[in-house]
Length: 381
Image 1 (spheres, rainbow, N blue to C red):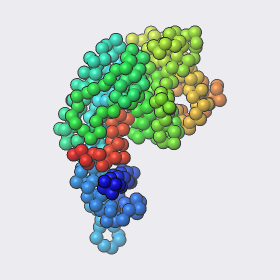
Image 2 (image 1 turned 180 degrees about the vertical axis):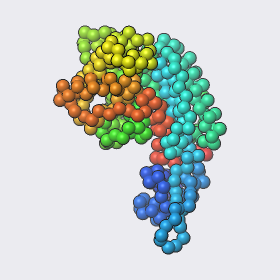
Image 3 (image 1 turned 120 degrees about the horizontal axis):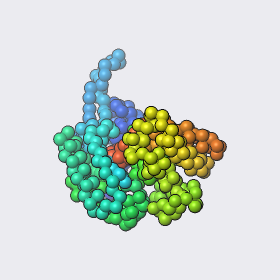
Image 4 (image 1 turned 90 degrees about the horizontal axis):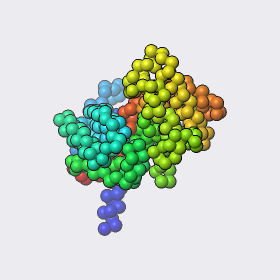
């Protein structure tokens, strides 16, 4: 059994090597693919044949060249092949999004609703309903979903939501009735996925940055040398529970004076006397002093918390995401001033993905898995 196992492992590794090289290049010939991977031309030819047959790579005619000889064919990711389903369960909305193998969004749906104080089973049933609609939309476009990833506002372990304070959930197992797929369902913290979404699809970032997800809760995704940093217990980035005022208001985590109680969306709306985020943005846009003051106060508090993070981790940049991206025109100056007051001067960037960062990251995580492990996808067909 030793020989065949080794052979299968080598083939899986080489399939991944070739597919990653094609993804990185965008479009590449077989000969250049052999050079870049170090594999023989015959090996590359056999692997490419399998990837084309499996719907992961497509061939097209190379553009005209001055060089003599027969023009080669170009290899690129097949955007009608495997696709990833991203799902997000957050405090005040649910989302579903499908991306193809090249990362293009092919379907998106967001449902706005307050999930606090609702039974987990009821909320998860609605997530499953959104997922089924996304699956149907993908099939109509001829896409084959290779798996799904669910972003949640809390700590996860496998397919269990261990703790989601803003939902008042603890030890909630997640089971979604989805069609069989190569990679099944995975679950990840939404702030982590938002950082990955930014890394893969969003604002051009350095390889070391912190992405701040501002919603009702506040989380941070930490990227070090181009890789997500989760910490020893997968709890890194709980920025919302950094204590700014030990005597401050009680937090859902059991502490007091946490950042999200002082600068999360609920806190900003309360300080501004606004009933919704849309109202807050409209009042800021018209220059209303109370709304601007509330946003600026939140910005100073976020900046103070981020100063500790940046002084500890020394990232090249901080990316403001979620509602903080929507409010950036009025919030960013206060964040920058607070960082400077604490001798912390990372580049301060604003997310291009905004509230879609986490669900884009979730869908992207599935697609990246196909590229990193095409053998599993091909074997499951």
